[in-house]
Length: 467
Image (cartoon, rainbow, N blue to C red; front, side, top):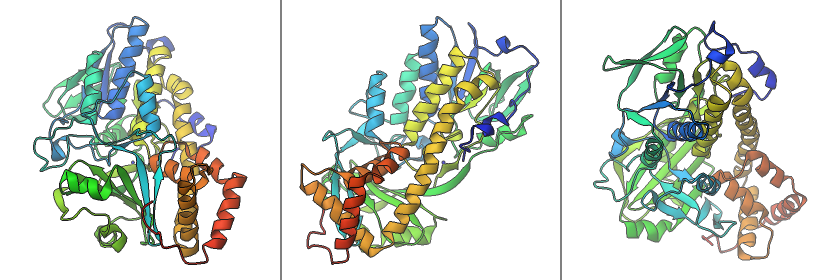
């Protein structure tokens, strides 16, 4: 769960729906009704910012968030298909907006990332030295989790949107129609409502985007690929003993495996995998790898909660139209990392456009599209970085060089952390891909990498252990 980086792409699109009225008709007024389809982070962020900005300009709006699921339930009934990591940069940005994650939402604060290879392992400490990365559940935890002492992240965001005045409607939308220049949403229960603006935050694991294809100018759903998420259950003490307050990332030579990690969350360890044509063969190859088995808590068994959700890989070329805007991974998101951060950015930009500029296709094109285009351009750089990383991890010499360089940086407090920062930013999503690329072109990084590649010809030191 891509947008062309050329500005001319946006210029080539016409409005989603032709409205015969004037531009001034395509603006929100007192009493305007706004629907948000999807109550995950993108939808809740959008409702929160829309109502916050409306209050600032003394505009009275009615906002309905359509979300049939309740995030109070464990398992599929409250699941939002996510590994559940919030980057340190997003935690800080949320705090500046007055959104402070309560302790009951954060399953565990992640202090470090441990990188595992067949050549050894190394712990990468937070560059800031602060425990700012949050491991959490988007819903209320895995099926079989019982009465969880934790709160849902998505449920928390819904509550702050409701505190601003949004209403949550537990209704599944099964059809969209256009009547008199405005969108109407039809529910599975036969109810129908008309709106002045519809914000689509349903994500790529919903069928809602397909409903938009039947409108006068269809919006094609984004390209997707599948991931794999599975919860392994042990005891909180055993999970902490083996995994600590660290996210464990694997750079293995398993064919087709793009990324894999194990995240500690209370009594559970969440396994997340990305790969090319991910299937059971690839899942089994990863779980049975000796390096991976060494990182599992003793006696950990897979719980009945596992899924293979879609993720956005090729965003919609035009995530907007008259009275319609696509936010979060319904439109564009960051490649592989920080999807919640992209939901925040797109939701805030769309809400600002709707309040200050209007809800026309032209308004979204001029004021919302640049945010989407910026994410897409950065993703293009990310594809190059991940492609290069795949090549490096296939070479034993380069794996040794990466491990040796990171070990030395972590062992010396005064060392410039070229490799450590690269790995941290890649795995956490805390920095844009263009910033990561800039770091790899730094003379200090290139010089140290060359030296460690030369040293990598020799076998690794005995350490080969988590630092």
